[in-house]
Amino acid sequence: MNILVINAGSSSLKYQLIEMINEQVIAKGNCERIGIDGRISHTAFDGRKYEENCDFPTHTEAFEKVVYALIHSPASVISGMDKINAVGHRIVQGAEVFNKTTRITDDIIRKIDELKELAPVHNHAHALALWACKKVIPENVPQAAVFDTAFHQTIPDYAFIYGMPYECYEKYNVRKYGFHGTSHRFVSMSLARKMGRSVKDLKLVSCHLGNGSSITAVCNGKSVDTSMGFTPLDGILMGTRSGSVDPSAVTYIQKKLGLTPAETDDYLNKKSGLLGIGGFSDNREITVAAEKGDGRALLATAMLRYGIKKYIGAYTAAMGGLDAVIFTGGIGENAADIRRDVCLDMEFFGIDFDVDKNSRVRGSFERITKDGSRAEVWVVPTNEELLIARDTKELFGL
Image 1 (cartoon, rainbow, N blue to C red):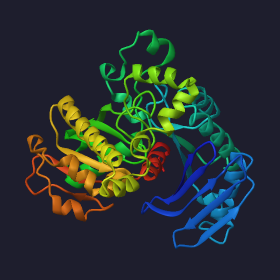
Image 2 (image 1 turned 60 degrees about the vertical axis):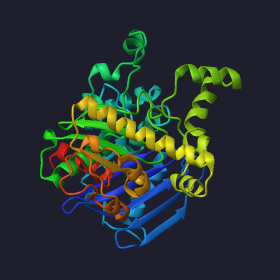
Image 3 (image 1 turned 45 degrees about the horizontal axis):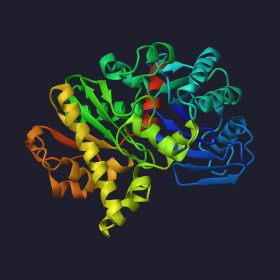
Image 4 (image 1 turned 180 degrees about the vertical axis):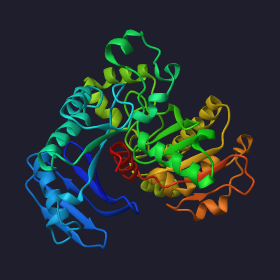
């Protein structure tokens, strides 16, 4: 049984075809520059590749090329469309409308598109891709929408409501939504299985760290708070995003620089964070600069580490305890120095950190605390595409 997983953006369409008996990726690829010119890069499980410059006026042509790559290209992996049993789509914003994986219908696509004001970069693009997919994928192949925000719908109102007039929430849907929900859910369940315990019995802090980063308190299997808010801008320092900032500082800078609301949004989302402080958006480049003694790079790395540590402490207090901290995402899985600096001197939380073991772990599923540590720290590789495939399989009883 094969499930096609789709992650569509405004000008890109990433995909994986996953064989669900062994949960193995048998092909993956990316259609880029949709609406500009176009290019597909496709790789089969055995290493065969198919790459081509294409004409992608819309997502429809991109989906058609995905079908060609899977079935007819030199790197094909299936004999026909009948070998695709279902399609699962990653959707960024489900707001309060969607709190679980949902079967896609025309009405569901329209509702997803109606939420575009809450996620202008993502949701309209998702809707366009969903319409395009319906044109290309046979009607008898069921399709599912898996929402990044759904996992966070269990956050209590006192944690998701902002201290603004209540009408902002009632009339304009302004609240904390949280993101990276599929990742936080996947690593939490994976760790519980690894520990031989039920996720419903654990208090976890999940740190998804990458160019975009979020930290989530997972108590008894449910998200009870998360660092990203109304948008993915909130929380800790990120690659180009500022993280949490006093709103009055934003309006002050807006006036000083003469920025429009759209320019302010761009300033905070694309010119801030590690880039704005240290001059590089990539953590690896920041680290190299810091090791050479660059003052601003050192500051940026210190801010990032402090922010992560602070959220772990806050969420431990909010849950009334801590069983484990999870590091995942590109930075979380690979940056041993960040994990070390965050977790040292946290014995008061029961963390007995193993510096030597941590230094050897890169991208593998490993515990990086010493035997007997009351609270454990783990590196858990995330796999959002696999979770989307699992959700899709479960929804349709495949």
